[in-house]
Length: 306
Image 1 (cartoon, rainbow, N blue to C red):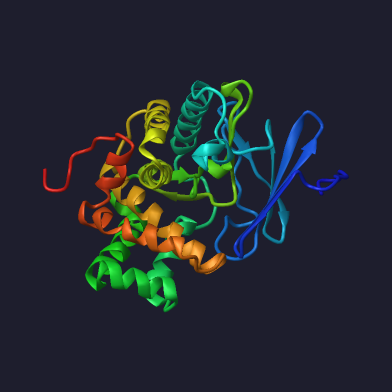
Image 2: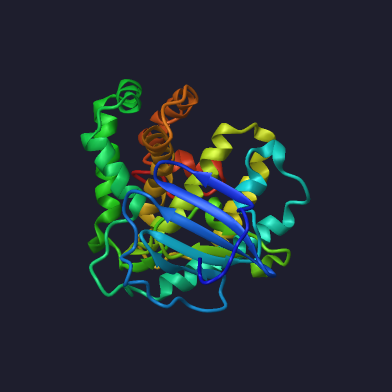
């Protein structure tokens, strides 16, 4: 592994799609992520990333394996979910998220940088296939609760997010998540693990995707935990700054994030009765064109038709 010897991983997390192992490596940590199935960035097409802005650049090791150097062994996701596990003041986490916003801005500013035609963002590719061709228990429950017309609407959102003609394409992270944000004791040293899901598309996708994850947490958790999630959303947007174009796609990406949670969990982990509650929260996301997700974390954008 990178020519180094490592003891047992500190953390070893796996689904049917992805395995993540974290090792101590001197003063840093080595994150090894194995994409077991699905779409990932072409092995020979990883461009150099802007330095010094909070992007932990992937080293491709073959066979779907990407390695990253990071300042910590726990992700932001581990720090904030489940809410009962969170300890310590929220301010360092908020500052860390502001760093992530700046990192995404620097990434997006590169413009199209992949040397080959890029695939759609991996989660959108997965969801589009699942919505249109899967007939598992989760899909049947989704259709029963939402109705066929709402399911068709979700598929149309996938198409809108992969149509780069409607917005100037940027270099996208492709699947930003609290699970790939690694805070540092100094929040300015926080990094976003970046590489395996790189693609091209509207910058609104990356921001909306991460906002949608925070929104799902807000919609699932006790209201007492909402203020931190609202602060994290505001810090992300403040760090990134205004979108140059494609802002209408922001709520669509945020709304689809909760749907991908259902489809990915059912596909790569298995059906869990807790998914019924997640599905029950989806109708208003569709009916508001994703704005209910943004509302959950205090992000205000013009509602449909205004």
